[in-house]
Length: 285
Image (cartoon, rainbow, N blue to C red; front, side, top):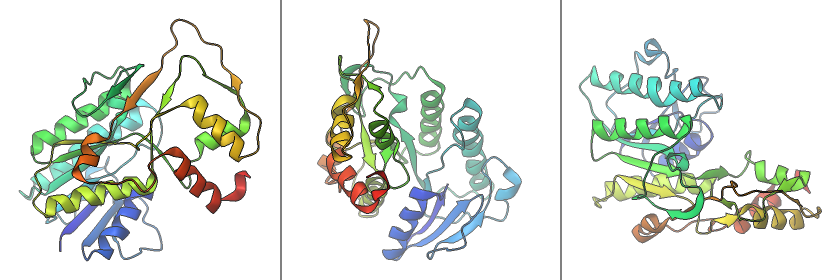
């Protein structure tokens, strides 16, 4: 049994904590405002940006999952998590001379490719936007702490409570058709599944890479996804967005490394994921 800290124990972190507890592990969830229902997780109320709130936290963990997410989509919020927050948490462990293993969540924002090319863990990373830049710096900081630590790069997360694409389909606004703009996604349940899978592989002594790109099996053009969703919602097809020679195509994320390790996605394409979402929540129908 491992003693595990989930730093940033929100939606995905709580699901991960429940899965870990079911396997017999002891879980502490670090969160600003712990929920009333603990689900077996022992919550510790703290703010990663405030070092004083981390005082009194246990540090004898075997494993740390850093799953914290910024409150807003601005540079200050990202810096609070991926720079200040990370450093504060590392400092809390260093004071007690304890170095647990880390699995740190990053994202595919670290890639800057925009012409529809495939990317994987070995692809060049030179992000042009602050989100990717700060996440890449946090990756480097975690691996500098211990080269055996792991980085997991999630693509766009969807699932219950994350319905942006459904909103686009229902609104029926303009969507890029040509050149195709590729979308990459991972269902929330697969985020939890990937983190558990890598943790258990490590416990089993499997030699792991430092980085894993976690995205489903089928990157798909935005037009294809929105048109299919509109059909499921019985809405009209989207309008065609006007484009010019400078229009970008995004990138396509390859999950080959994760699949070769043995992970199988619960929702391998957007169709399985959104069919389940629409079945469980008919508010969009």
